[in-house]
Image 1 (cartoon, rainbow, N blue to C red):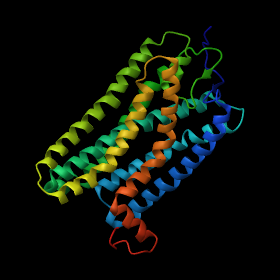
Image 2 (spheres, rainbow, N blue to C red):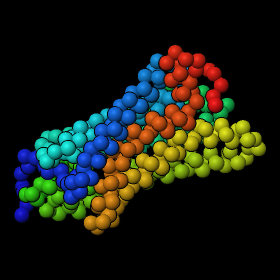
Image 3 (spheres, rainbow, N blue to C red):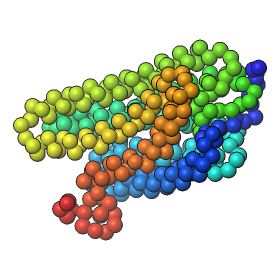
Image 4 (cartoon, rainbow, N blue to C red):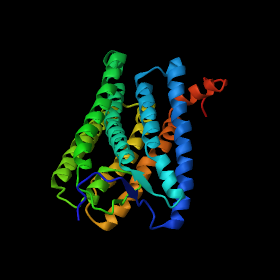
Length: 312
């Protein structure tokens, strides 16, 4: 049986097979969302208000924080409603909007991480020319490219997904409207959609990740040629936070979008998807603030304390 018209709404199954787990997840998701709001808003405020953070690295970091705020807000409120009560429905329009924002911002995030890797590469490998290469105009251009690529990817991939003939039960085996989940819901031929998703995954996941690895390969070679422990620590301090975030984001996204077709893989991918949507946006501010002395000093100045005191 195939539904040839647009459904009134979908049923987001989420973690309904684990009713006890849902209440625990409600507390975890709510706590993570509050941390995301506070942490990322603080980073944006510090980057805007503190002149000492008006640098390319913090420009990209504030973009990343703004993206995380929008990303989690697009799905977490609906997720909290579904986790708390028996009502787990979402309208077709709501699902479409959520799908658009989720794919748009997820794609932009991957491209932004690549731009940040390029910034670190120039900072470590071309320190004398850093200010000339990474100038403010280039930063705005790179950020614009990331956001435009995310928008184009969402505009291209979503219409074919929403035009699929969905099965009449309209049960989405996920906690959020995502392309893989809606493809699985279809009772028609999804060959074109699966090919499209695979091609998009290569350009949005594999290519950016490859560029990031190439950048860090060049950084590693440059650092190994330097016979200075101070330079090593400085390079590690510059790149470590970004490397941790890249690892968290890409491991989660790959587990969701490049998983094999099996019930076990789908269940595992659901938990990875939850971590990607809720966990990483709440951890990113902590990772960057705990490992970035400039951000910590700016926070102390924001609180009216001596931000230039010696770090412990």
